[in-house]
Amino acid sequence: MFDIKTYNKISDEGLSILKDKGCNVGPDIKDPEGIILRSADLHNTPFGDNLLAIARAGAGYNNIPIDECAEKGIVVFNTPGANAEGVKELELCSLVMSSRDVLGSIAWVRSVADKGREIPALVEKAKSDFAGPELMGKTIGVLGLGATGAMVANIALEIGMNVLGYDPFMSVEAAWMLSREVKHVDDLDEVFSKSDYISINIPYNENTHHLLNDEAFSKMKQGIRIINESRAEVVDDIAMTKALDSGKVAKYVTDFPNETILKAPNVIAMPHLGACTPESEDRCAVMAANELFDYLENGNIKNSVNLPNASLERMGNCRLCVLHRNKPRMITRILDFISARNINVEHMINKPRGGYAYTIVDLGKKIGPKTAEEMRSMEDILRLRVLYVD
Image 1 (cartoon, rainbow, N blue to C red):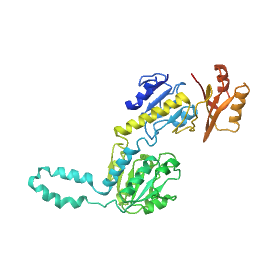
Image 2: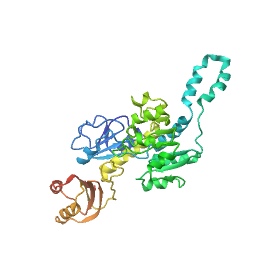
Image 3: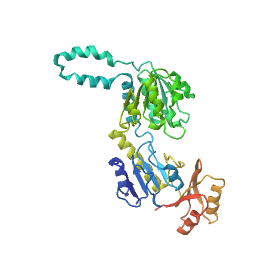
Image 4: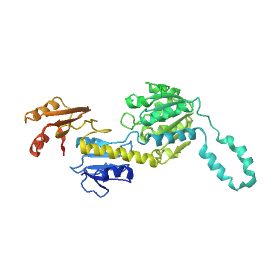
């Protein structure tokens, strides 16, 4: 079947799917057709000509050179929503920690462990030092309303918060998940100016780089509390440090510690715990394995981060999977090539994404290796795969 190389420790729940389908899976595969990984950095990893796809068992994909992969016709998948429950629960915990000095109170209680009978009186005297506001009735701005953001928005409503949701690219699936009580806001400045808390759940890209910067902080309420379960680079750490020093930001809870932010006051930093639950790891691995195998076996693309998504039920005796540049007349050229050889098209789909496009064509009869090579040599075709029906 297919050779799949693993990086990191991948849940057996996912690997067993591939193994049960006859795939050769493991970390020592030399020339794989597929890769499944979590956080391993592939930016300096050479990719062989046989590599067709990379599946990231998680939502982020900064560890994969997605543009390079697109140019080579290598599909990169992620697993959006598979770890949303784990991240949502940690965000709920983070909201409470950002309001009350839970961590400081625990450390203080341990510091008086040797005070014996004095402890109850000391506790009553000191408890106000760790007090903070309740969440109920406060306004939270949720940046990003994907799988995780929608869950955070909904649970914030359940605990009595007012919720402003910002996501200019919200999907139909996310909209179905989101409570109608969430106020959808198109102006980011409105979120900044009205929120008592901000929860960051947006992907990192060139448009979201340092989205929270000096200008953004200047528009926020004094004493705002910010939770970052997105990516470190969405926040300008230098600007955040100044905002913390001035009291503009009362507390910053982040899952992405670094040298700069750990020197700032009122920071609660965790070691990227968002998806660190066995349930999340299982769901991510299962989703990644299914995406990877469906592409290798059937040519279907779902949840790609660099190339078009397209799925088609199998028909006919032969399937052409064509990754190509998104240029005028490409579909006509592909169909003309097929019809010139008296081959009937049973079914097809074409989907564009930026400068790339993906065309799946099911044919009435099989084509041979020579015909496939002729088609591969066509200008602007990045990769052509021929899948036969057994």
